[in-house]
Length: 353
Figure (cartoon, rainbow, N blue to C red):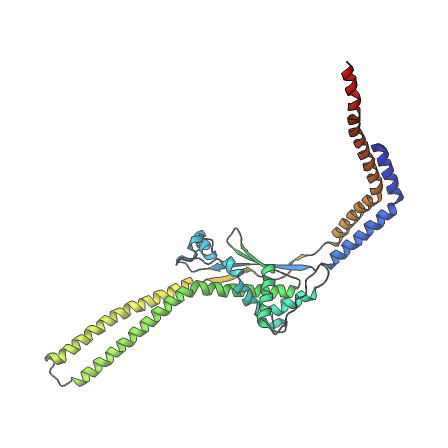
C-alpha cells in the first residue's frame, strides 16, 4: 500500500464513521462547556494612592517621591535616613492581618476574615475552591486563613509615575469594595505611624525637657520669694544673706537659658513632626464597575469540539495507520536482512578466481 492508497483508505473510513467522530466531538464540547460553567466570575478593583509630605516650597521633586515611596537605595534600609517601602508595607502580613480582623458594619458587622471564608465556601466543587473548615469563633485561625486568602488576592505596585496601585480580586463585588477601602485605610495608618514614629519620640522628649525646666524655674521662684520673706529686715551687706541670693539668681539665669533652648527645640520638634506626617490620598477610589474575568463558554466549546474531532479522527483511523506502519516496518527489516544472506554466497566465487 502506497501513500495515495493509504490516504484514500483513511478518507473512506472517516466517511464511514463520521457519525462516531461527530459524537466524540459533541461529547468533548459538552464536557468543556460544563468546565466553563463551573468557573466563577471574579472581579478586580484598582485604586491608586499617593502620599504627600510637607516641604519648604510645598512642592515634591522626583527624589522626594522616591524617598516617600521607598525607591531609594536598599543599603539605607536600617539607617536614620531610611525610607519606608510602601509596597512591602502594603503586602506585609501585619497589614493583611489588620485587614482580616476589621469588622464591616454594612455586612452584618462581620469581620473581613469571616466574609472571605464564607465567600470561599459558597463556590466549592469541581474546578472550584476547596472548602475551608474553620470555627468562626476561633479568631486567631480565622485571621490566619484570611491572611493567606488576601496574600493571593491582593497585590500592590508602583507605576512609572511613582503612584501606588492596589489591586484586589474576589467573587463578590461588595467584598471587593469593602476590602479595598480597608486596605487603603490600614496602609495609610501604618505608613503614617512609621513615618512619624521617630519624630514623635523626639517631640515628646523635647516637651518633657521643657516641662521639667519650667518646674525647676517655678521652684527657684518659690525659693527666691521665701528668701525675701525671711531676710526682709536683715542687713544685705552681710555675706551670709547676700551670697544665697546671688547664687539663686545665677541658678535662675542658667535654667532660664536652658529653658529658652528647650522651648526652641520643642517648637522645632513639633515642626519636624508635622513635616514627617504624610497625607495619603486615594486618587482613584475602588468603586465599580470592576474588571470582570470569566471563562468564555464559546471558546471552551470550540476547543472541546476541535479536540474531540481530533481524538475521533485518530481513534477511527488508528487501525489503518497502525497496519500501514507495521507493513512498512516489516519491509524495512527484510531489506536490512537481505545483504547479510548474500555475503556467504559471494565469498566462494572470489576464492576460485
